[in-house]
Image 1 (tube, rainbow, N blue to C red):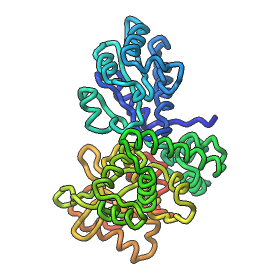
Image 2: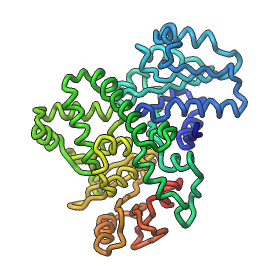
Image 3: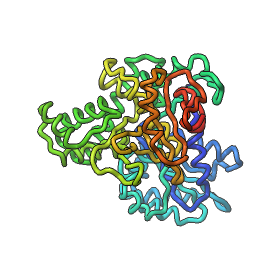
Image 4: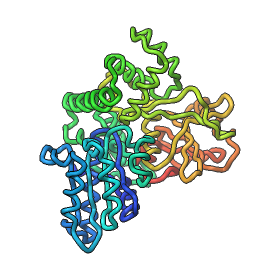
Length: 412
């Protein structure tokens, strides 16, 4: 069994330890939410918390079937609390408990309970959750493995070095092709096994998280729409354009239906919509967004090897990494120029361009131009696969993508 650690997410949970908030871990199915809770429980034990103060309930386990009644669950947890100190309650895949919020809100009221829940379903990041949990929660959104986590599970790349660790480029190719879902590390880089596993995840997401929840009847149209998004990552598009394209494929679905389908896919965390932001006025632009996907291995499975468009793949990877590092990410617009990403943390922006290579003078100027026109002194970066380290041109830093991905900070 390969040891997979999730240090950034673990750090966030530790930061909210004993706070009067329900900690809600959300994300696409099989991204590692259950493992994260177990890692956190191990951390608690390492600090001296006794097992009697830790309750872990996985609602996908049939042995816990009777606990999917929120009243039974509530009584079960209370009856097993250890006296005289804090109890740590982990409720995994709690969306399987009907009216779970009634139990969760009541348990949070106890001064000796620190409550953690996970869920794959969509409303866990929507306004519904704020209503269900009376606003007393914090959401931690997980993704599948970052490249750094993937490397750490297999080998030990040296973060912060002035050269790329030997073998990292090969690992990056594996990371793309064989998926970033944690369990795929156990499948010995057997592409047939990986694809069978990814097919099962997709089927579960489409049928359970999307079709059943949203009561969608045109499953074939939904699946074709999903493939369209997967094949057009990183490209600005509109729901009108998608609707027209779907009609050309023989699916007569209008703009509103497209919007509903896209919303459902977003809610399942299989795709991410990135809105555009005007750099000068900091105003959201209403039309035309970009989409990225949760896992590139899943994209290879759906579309095949013909989709070796490594530039937009790198852009997708950078987007996910920025999200993992806690940034809110938008596509930037400056007049008729585009900035790949404006990433905000604590209200402070950083600007990113992503390109496979900028060794060609024309390509470098094309990437530099939008960043040069931004009239502030916040960080500006070009992320590229070129073997360039620490390059600074007119205040714009060029960073090798692999070194940046295995580092811990944006300017590394």
